Image (tube, rainbow, N blue to C red; front, side, top):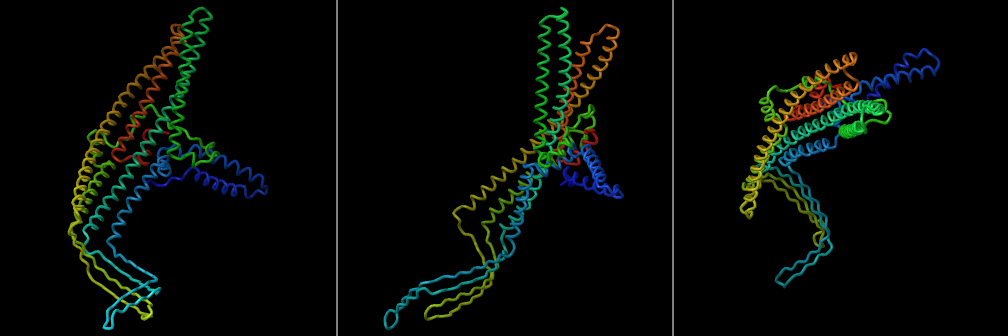
Length: 491
């Protein structure tokens, strides 16, 4: 587990306490209570503002830690892991001495008939009490099935731990997807808003031309339609940003952890996507072959499935053990007392110690059926392992090529943006010379906004591919996200 990172609420409480202590030290020489309260208020506001700028909520690593502490799906995986670990304790307990105590208190009626030289003799005892108590200790000496259960529980515990690690990788991918979608949608919204302003300026220009008789009604309708389309793009991007933000808050539990006042002073903002993001992604391996090899060895789902095969093999061994005899050592002691009419205060005491041998002879074919069933389940587990390896290999192949394609697309888009920037500079110089118009400049700006939007989509594709690749090799952790933030300059 990553190191614990204090929540914003805890940080606020710590800063407030430090501010109060600092106020008492600075303003202690002053007698006026009002001045000290005023100083406390000033330092409190400063500490909250500093906290807002240094908020861990905008950090990928701290969001990952918060998600592990809050996300219901991951908490469910933790509970499943904890339940899987208990199988080993249960298996160990079955090999330890077993102690049983039995106590019985009853009211009895007894009727007996015996034949004597004088004839039959009937005896009837009613409503007499009896008390029976016994203690037994049993220790398994030879129980092949219990030892196979213990070996199986070890594999089950490893399976549970690796399944939790797989759930952690899945949580990291969901977190990264929400972060990237929010950042991309927010950037698209900002670009769409700028595009809307340009289209409105072009519409005003066309309206003036129509009034001057230099444009037609068709040009005006086309410009109006472009404004309406730009408004719809702003609305669509804003909706996508709101959905992605809500998804992130549901994963990290930020809304539940912060009060309304804390959210007002410490607003949650999306990460930023620099233009040179793709070139700075921290890759664990350089070649596709290395990624494939590492995924086959380090992927937590593959490793967990391998231990599932071992557990299934032990299940077959357990089923076969039902054909074998068992040997137990036991010791017991019992005491019984009753109070019939002619045996008032009668007591019986007995003690025994020895070895018990149980030999299975015939069970109706149930054991052989269980063996066949366990072997079939073993074959299924082996095929599941092969299927998991193939699925992970395909995923690594796909995401590697997605990342490489994103690198190529980003390079071309950056070149396009550079060319458009040079063209914009040339148009501005052309306006001074009278060979270019303001409309030409606005059209070129629209092309630049479109290129910026495409670059943001490419960054989204690259970051999602990076997160899936890291998850495939089991390396998507808080430290990996911290490294991503530092090297790729995601603030």
